[in-house]
Each structure stands twice: as C-alpha cells, then as structure tokens.
Amino acid sequence: MREHSNESARPEGALIDRFQRRVTYLRISVTDRCDLRCVYCMSEDVKFIPRAGLLSLEEIVQVGRNFVDLGVNKIRITGGEPLHRRDILKVFRELGELEGLRELTLTTNGTQLPRFAHDLHAAGVNRINVSLDTLQAERFRALTRNGKIEQVMAGLDAAQQAGIPRIKLNTVVLKNRNHDEVQDLVGFAIERGFDISFIEEMPLGVVGDHDRAECFYSSDQIRSDLARHFELIPTAESTGGPSRYFRIAGVDDTRVGFISPHSHNFCDHCNRVRMTCEGRLLLCLGQEHSVDLRRVVRANPGDDEALKRAIVSAMEIKPRGHDFDLHGQPVIFRHMNHTGG
Image (cartoon, rainbow, N blue to C red; front, side, top):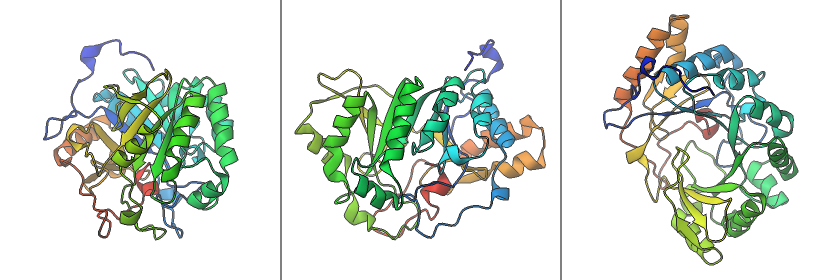
C-alpha cells in the first residue's frame, strides 16, 4: 500500500455514524463457498448463492477503492473461503495498490495457502487470520464435517515460508467440543510464533448440529482455564478489530485475544462494516440494517460519486449494537458463510 500523497484530497473521517463512531475498517466477502462445512458456520444442507448473484471482481475493487477514498484504512477479505474465488489475486493486487490503505488482510481456513501464500504477500498482505478450532485430526474432521487438518498445517507452513509476518489463529470455542484444547492451542501458537484469538460462537443462522446455549463457553471461562498454565498480562494493543489482547509472561511473539460478543459486548467502539459477496453492505454483524451496493453500482456504471453518496448515507442506519440471543431462535437467519467470516 502506498501512503497518500495529498492528505487533503481524502475526506478523513467522512464515515461517522449517528453515535459518533468513525468507520475505518471494511470487511469484504468475495464468496459464500467453502471447501469445509464448519458446524457453527453453515447448515449441513447449505445452498450457495448463484454465481450470477455475486459482485464481479471489478465491482469489489470499485467498492473497496471508494471506501478508502472515504477514509477506510483497513480492508479484510473474507468468505466463505475467499481463496476459492476464481482469479481472486486480482482483487488483492488492485486493492494493495490503493493510496491510503494501511492494511490489507485475509481470513482463511488455510487449505489453499500452499497455492497462494507467496502471491498474497507480494500483493501486500502482511497479516492473515487462519481458522483453527482443534489440533486433533478426528475432532477437526467432525467440526468441519469433511476437513483434513494436514491441509491447514501445510497452509500455515506455506504462509510462514512466504514471509507473511503476522499470522493469527481464530478459534471458535464450543463447550464439550473443543473447550478442553485451549491450553494446547495457545502452546501451539507460542511454538509457531502466532497470535491466537478465542471467539464466542455467534448465533447466525440455524445450524442444527448443536444447541448454542448448551455449547456456549465464555471468554471468562477460557481465561480462567488458561490462567492455570500461563500468566496473561492485559495490553492495550489492537489490530483494529474487536479482539481484547493479552500478552503471556516470558513470551515475546504471541498475543492471546478474546472476541466476546456475549460476555463483553464490544459494540460501543465499533469501527467496522462488512459487505457480503452479493454486495449487501451490512452495518452490523448482528442486525439486518443494510444497503444494496450492487444495485447502486449497476444502476450507475462508472459513477463513483453515486457510490460514495450511498456509502456515506448508510452510516445513518448503522445501529448501536447487536441483539444476539443464545436462548431463542437466531435473530439473524443468514449463516456466517453468507455474511462473511
């Protein structure tokens, strides 16, 4: 990413919502398809969006460019599994050239990193998040319904060999499914020099595999488990997202983060919006407030000003926060793979 040569040309702070929160972080989903079927992410009989309904790669870049013009300085590419989108490197390469974009990142399941890691780094990706919920092969197969953990491990190796400097593991913790592995996962992160974030499951869509209330395992419980083995030291460090980070006494390279939508709501300081793969701009992960940017782009071909007006206007409907409820039917019926991880 190049630094902006004329700061006055970019309207800093243009994206400010009704609650005076400045949006600087855009998450873009490029596909709802994935080679895994994680139990908390999608239903077993998942139906994917027809390919004709997806934003084109050119439209994705156009949206990203206009968000950066409006003051966004971090973009994360998500899915589904984003590296399954055909010719996806075009998006990384073109976004990576945007002036004013400070960070271009990726969330992935890791299975495709052996193919893409070097090209991603060359395109400007210097930090990636890799989903890893267990270190046990049989448990991995059960949680993903079909996955082979060896593919993810090969992907982590490839990312390190490519020189990507910051790699973080994302672990969704489910009681009686993988909560007993949090110590081992932190040990693995320390051994490899990775960061790790533990995530409370978010009730998006009907999954059928488990009762979310019964499987809920809070960040406080995880911290208590880890405290028996590690000294966790609070830190004000941030990567621009919702993780609250801790350092580990005697360990230099690994931070432990907690994403706690239920036990420690982080909405008051939300700086994020996300766009689904069909161009729906979601103003909150846990609400349905949205704007159809695909309609705006296609009704106004080549008109960046119309797109900018739609983005700025969308800030007026960004809600204060989510209404996640573990004990009833999900408030949000779209699954995580449709939303963008």
